[in-house]
Image 1 (cartoon, rainbow, N blue to C red):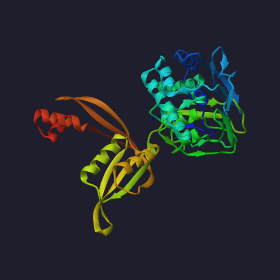
Image 2: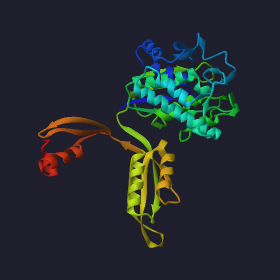
Image 3: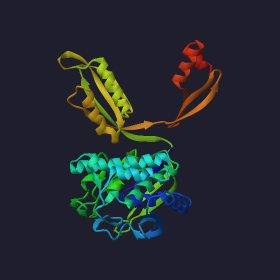
Image 4: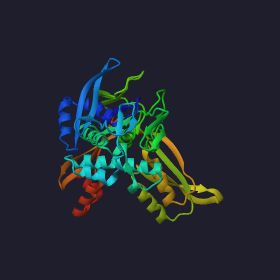
Length: 399
């Protein structure tokens, strides 16, 4: 499996993520040219080679309106560990951002990814300020350079050939920052909300190490957080921040292959003895629809000698809160147990092969020294019904 590992030992910001990703391409200058052709109004991307602590990496900057880097004549200052943003009170709503994104010359997937990232930011701002998402007006994250960070990162990830993104625990920093809403604690409330469910730590450096934009991008794209898996590294990119610290100020991106897969999953369980089979079936369907990896029940003897069931939901760790909400909504339980487990999986691919009765999808699984294949059930069932033969006969027709 082609895996991208992001090392966030110095936090994450949009410009540093972009710089790290662009370092993975054979010709970074070609990617800068593509970014500058995306059509973001009054925005120009620039990349430069920078050496920190003896390590050479890339540094990304975004110039807005007449060559001024990131709006330097605006009045509010929002200091980041990577660079200093100075912004006006530009009250940009989510519909305004989406209108800008719709006008860009970018693939539809990149457009949808960028919108989804901004929806995460809007949800976080809504939670922090206690108002509806529709009432949110972005300050720092609504300006053109922030839009450039989000779109640029989404576009570079779209261009890279990978299957999965894993990231380390994220350093947040500590202390206070000054932004459009006043002086706030680190991590800022919106950033803290975005980082829920993600392993974070403060570290020894005072200041904002992870920005809201960086947190939203990690939240949306990263499938799991933890130590770097066993992988063969093909390319490494260093995205340098604009400040210097005792430790090298960068996001490191490593692209390579992992032969065998292991990931963490969350198992949510509850005991039920007062629900009908129809209601339980509906709850299972809703959890599957929301993205659960598996939902199943097992018979159980409960208190007062009542027959009941053990209701289980397996999901990705980042979906735990969502699944807990749905389990409380669709079942009668008063409590849910959570267990974190390692999950070992085989890599899966699908091919289409010819048979006597037409094309059949063949599912392949490999890893951990194992390799197996089997035809898609629906294809075999269709053949059996159309030819009026048994399921086993239809399966044997592929041999």
